[in-house]
Each structure stands twice: as structure tokens, then as C-alpha cells.
Length: 265
Image (cartoon, rainbow, N blue to C red; front, side, top):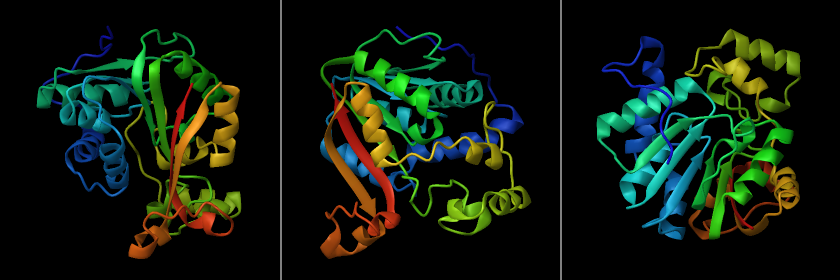
């Protein structure tokens, strides 16, 4: 059984307060801007009742707590960043959720050993260096229980919002600007974010691995995983007649805002 490595306090330090607000909103708001589609798909595709769930790269725990609240399941949240886990533990205690546990752990140094029915990587795969992501996917394959699946969601590199700094610089697709120009724009609008590893927008941008569905597919195959289902959500899906269409082909793939992929052993 996993146990947390960090203790909560009655009040989080000031530098974690913005992260707390962000994570709490992700937990409570069914229409949180960048998660509403994730939540909709998860509700429609999966029944996690009675399942053992791993939220890998859980961040500050907003979605981890959402799984624990919405299903009678056991949820483990694992993240590399101690600041993230501290916020997650605070929220767990605040909302008295007993079916969720958090662990701050580098799984490449200390591998996971439990088996899970459902493993989710929500908006995290694009932040992991490619060689590490390949090793992690191979490890997660070994963590799957019989019949278990892995669900990944991420903004592909051609997405208008893939840079994670679109709001700061005011431009979609800004990742295709000359690097020096973009760095200057980010530095001009830079701000601190909650995290002991990536503490500001510029470091977060530099940590992106430029993930695409094609590159992810290559990594999952190397890890011995097979794609069972894929949904490429595009700006054109907002049109009623095109809600269920996959626009994953050039040049409309530049309008894809998020990829959703299910893989299994």
C-alpha cells in the first residue's frame, strides 16, 4: 500500500496557494476549461467502480481526487515533484477522501510494484523526456492487471495550445516562432508556477518534449502496448455536425487541441 512521503499542515505555504486554487478548481469544476472534455470522455467510456486506479504524474491531485470522489474505487496518485504532492495531500485532507493516496516518487529510480486496472496519464506525457517516457511506459505495462488499460491525454505539438504559454504570450501556435523570439516573449510575461522542478513558465516550456500522436505511438509499440482507441479533438468538433469526427490528417491536425489514446498490453 502506498503511503505519502509528505505531511500536510493546517495551512499551505504562501508560494503554494496559487497551485492549491488551480488544483481545487480542477477537482471541483466539471467544466474546468482544459479538463471538461477529459471528464466527459472518462465518464462515458469507463466505469471505475471497484477498480484500482493509478494517476501517473498526478500533479497537484485535482483529477486524482476527482476519480476518488466519482467512483467507489482505490486511487493512487504518483508524482515526481514534492511541491505538487504537498498540495495534493492538503486537498485530500480538506475533502476527507479516504480512498486516495499520494506518493512522491521517481519511478525510474524506484519502480512501481502494484497492479492496476486503470492507469491514466492526464496532461503529463508531453512533460517527460522521450527516453524517460519510453521507460515509464514499459514499466506501466508491467503494472497493468489482467484486462487493464492505460488512458493518455495530451495536447499534440501542432496544437494551437501545445506550448502551454499561449495565454502568457497571447498567440496560439507560438511554438513555431523562432526560438529566441519566443523565449523573449515568454521572459517578458514570465511568472512563477507551483513546482519544485519547473518553477516558472519558461522552464515549463523548455521541459516539453514536442509529443505527437505519431511519436507516442512509436513509444507505446516499443513498450509492448497496443492502441485500442484514439480520439483527436479538433476545433471543428465544436460544430454540431462534426462532433464525432476525427480530424487527425494534415492540415487539419493543426486544429487538434487534444489527443486521447487508450492502450493495453
